[in-house]
Length: 275
View 1 (cartoon, rainbow, N blue to C red):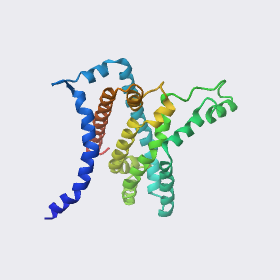
View 2 (tube, rainbow, N blue to C red):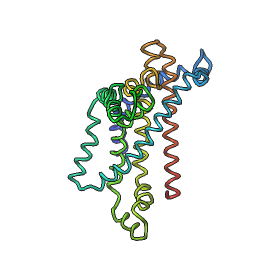
View 3 (cartoon, rainbow, N blue to C red):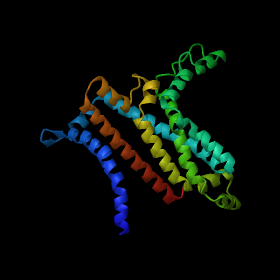
View 4 (cartoon, rainbow, N blue to C red):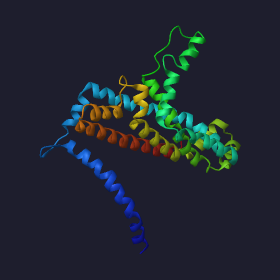
């Protein structure tokens, strides 16, 4: 009886997910595998044979992975500091971490345009310090997209890690120190392995967000550094090629699933080895 009630409670949510998520996705993906009455993968093989599309795909993958790595490197020590602060300070720090998420991504991207532009804050500072002779092209580069993506998704990494790290008992760290481990070694041998679940969630959120983001790559990368999301926009809104956009969207979905699976397997191996 309890299971029947549980299924009934789940039914409205499942209906909404199926009607507004699964069916629209399938209706976009399935036609790309059909050529008349036959099954075909020609659209996907043609995509990867095209050097232009292949370059966009590799750029998207590269930017997303670099963003994940930087967010992990910056997020782990920050989250540990936040998790070990007293409750009042912890609340303030978490609020400061979440606050940027309350600002529209367009506004945050325009802020980076002001900073990275040819006459922006960073170029003016470097010129004032006589570190460069003329303004550098910092905007509309892969580096600009990565910087904007890190700023956009770093809070997700920190919040995911804080939720796990604050539940790790402090006695474990003290026990490692009492057995002769230095603070750094105790962190990497005790705290970091126990934080792997939060790290996995953070990496998945950051990667999927960076791989599918549109506003930041469009404003900071422009048409010079196009990624899959901006390519989809071009295919649909400029060229009216909805079939081609469906192919690109399918590739994006499959790539995200494969990367998430790889992250999970890597984390499982690290746990087995006790790294």
